[in-house]
Every structure is written in structure tokens, then in C-alpha cells.
Image 1 (cartoon, rainbow, N blue to C red):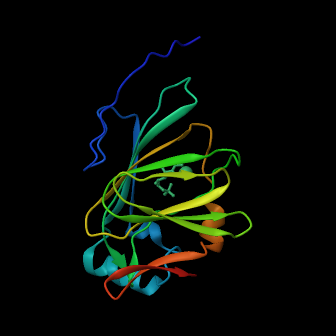
Image 2 (tube, helix red, strand yellow):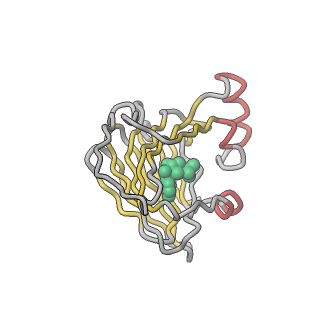
Image 3 (cartoon, protein in one colour):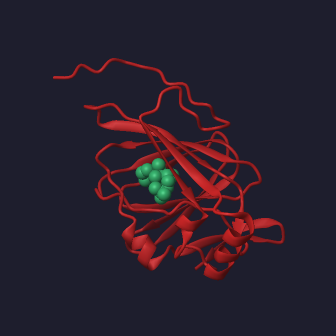
Length: 185
Ligand code: F6R
Ligand code: ZN
């Protein structure tokens, strides 16, 4: 049996960098195809400013541990007035919750239960959000700086992106009069 030893990992709350990491992935504008409200605006954005980075996820996993954690760092920006967002997912395992702790920036966490019930939690430094089991979740950077949050979940939770990609979420966040507005989709 593997003996797991205690350990502290430094997390840079401004950049999302981890002192030690075991994996990462990045998503760019082209990864939001089919997800944004205005597909033509997305094509224009890619033509004008290139396939720029939208967000990056860095994780720290230990074999034999139930839990793991990491950071998501989201760049500020909008497509057709809609603030940059993550793809959004349910967890494959319906009994798996997650926690998001915002370290810097401003955002909105959009949540949706299986029956379509929607909810949202403002993301700002110091706010720790509880994502209950079987609620889809998508984060949105509504500010002008990077949005950095630490997430903690279960390694076996898995991701189900299909449902959101197909049906979308019931809420979107647009810039309206210089401020973010959560709008029913
Ligand atoms: C993991 C989790 C986050 C997201 C990340 C990117 O369960 O909720 O680490 O994976 O914020 O979002 P997605 O995975 O929706 O592209
Ligand atoms: Zn998740």
C-alpha cells in the first residue's frame, strides 16, 4: 500500500501557478465554438485577435489519494458582449461535489441542477463556493483582470461535457451598460 505523506503546495493567487504540478490544459477561443451565444462574433474575434488563450487549468494529483486540487486562471475578454467562460460540465459521478475558492479577479459561477433549476454565485477574492453533487458548473470572468480560483474535488468525479455542449446552460453573462448581467438563455 502506498503511504501518502502530508505536503504543502504553494499556490500563487495572482497567476494560478502551483509550486508543484502534475498536469495542465489550456482552452482558447476556438474551443468555445458551439458554446457562445453569437457564433459569428466568435469567428470575427478569432480573425481579429487570433486564437487567444481563454483559460488554463493546472492540477496537482497524488496516486492513491481520493481528493485533488488545482487552479483555473481565466483571461478577461468578451465575444459579442458575452464574457469569457469555461466550457462547463456535470461530473460523471453524480455524487461528487466540488469547491471553488476565488483568489483574484471578479467572476460569476453559473450552476444548473439536472431538473434545469439555475443558480449563480459571485466569484471574488475570498469567496469559497460549494458546488453540490450533480449541479453543472461554468465560471465566467466578468472583470478586467485574470480570474484565478482554486478548485478542490474528487479524483474519480470525471467530467461530462456532452449535455452542456448539446443543450447549453440556462444562463449567460453579458456586458450591459458597462456591468455584467446574468441573463436567462
Ligand atoms: C473540475 C472543475 C474545474 C474545471 C475548470 C475548467 O471538476 O470544475 O477544474 O474543470 O475550471 O472548466 P471546464 O472543465 O468546464 O472546461
Ligand atoms: Zn467540476
